[in-house]
Image (cartoon, helix red, strand yellow):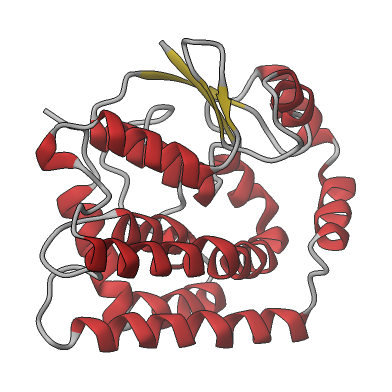
Length: 257
């Protein structure tokens, strides 16, 4: 069975997890916490980041885009994530690249800026399914971890505002694309562009978790948030693109079969 190395709360890990489950590819998830993943990832052939898929052949895929493509190749015809029509494929891959290369990083930085001040709430979900010693050490090192993450991603109020504006621009672009009545970004079929936008947007809209931890994607419930953070989150949840993400999670975030 394939082995997927993840952070429990990582939206890039969710992108890979969702693709594998949706396409019916069997795998076992191996969850680690921030910084503790590095030796496991390097042993698997990666550098520092998750997700990494260690295939039963012994080869590794070290980028979520490659994992999605692999999952689509293994999927039955009605679960393929990449269209066969060249024009549709070009549109889907263009959106997928834009989202994965730039958008996802903006979401990560804004989400950390929002949630690092709420460390107790963050760790309640961040740590789900990880080894006990990693959970213990991360808890004991909370102040240091907060500083390291802030420095690593250059977190600041100004950068958070710039990230928010860039994210909202993508939300507006997706909403305009869907105004013609198409159900999905690429047209009539659910593809990697939809999965990627929904998965990478999850920290902004907090879709309900249908599967129980540790198998599911664990995120806080909106009612758990302090008022100020809830208001910022609701700006995205109530946007037409945010509502669409919530609907896609409801209708398409399920395994094959």
